[in-house]
Image (cartoon, rainbow, N blue to C red; front, side, top):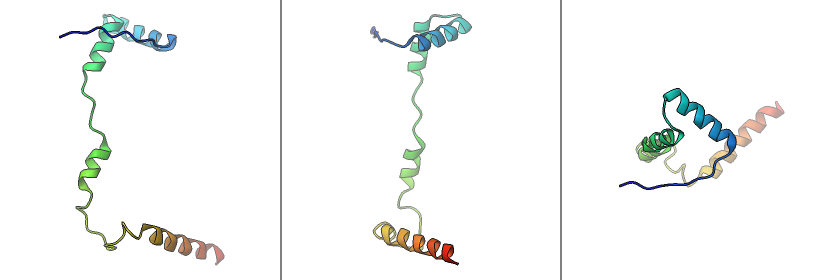
Length: 83
């Protein structure tokens, strides 16, 4: 199946697209079609998210007490400034 897609792009983008097409010996349309055919890689966040909950941490309630823990860390840091 094939479809036609019409888009408006800035002149600067078109100029770079034409440069790539000339270098590859093809048309700007073919360059865009090739770029769109490349699968989008899965983001690293998705990989990290799969690990959530799989690590052991010394503070078992860190998720529910994160404000308290951050506050404690800030107090400790500010104490160091008074010294």
